[in-house]
Image (tube, rainbow, N blue to C red; front, top):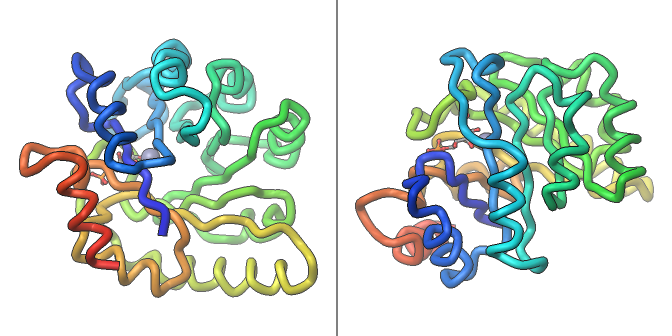
Length: 224
Ligand code: DX5
Ligand code: ZN
């Protein structure tokens, strides 16, 4: 299981040290939650390409960066995140009209293409896209903030994705990675691993006042 910190709930005046501590603790993948003040239900604004570019400079080229675009115009702004240095752009299926076009654009730009779906969104529009997707991110909270409670009702969706990707791989197709995001802690990460999840976003479970990132990561890894 790859554990990917979300910096959403970090102290933004201290982000350089947060990412330094994450890397020092052995983290190799950082999840960047971009919100445009419009798309998520609570109209939050977080950060954009300028901060991401600074984070890329800080962590160097070996750390994998994804951006989770909770924005209304991902189809028009994806290039800004590629230029800022992310390895993977993850866009909401609910917010993109022509997803195949976005996947092609990202691949043509040398970037990995991911799709994310909200807890209430079915797989109907997702399964046909699987052969070309590098990653599917299943939201286990309603997007908009960190520290929310995990929604176990997404289990069936994850297990369906797992079975479909396994079949895809057995036919020589793409090994689309499965990721989950929202409410993941030490007490439930083994459960989602059992469902077939390969990477888990952890925000408040890693970056909090209870312990260092290294201490929190050790607790999470010991649960796997
Ligand atoms: C929520 C974000 C998540 C969030 C996860 O809109 O997409 O990545 O930061 O935070 P926790 O792990 O605290 O639920
Ligand atoms: Zn996220």
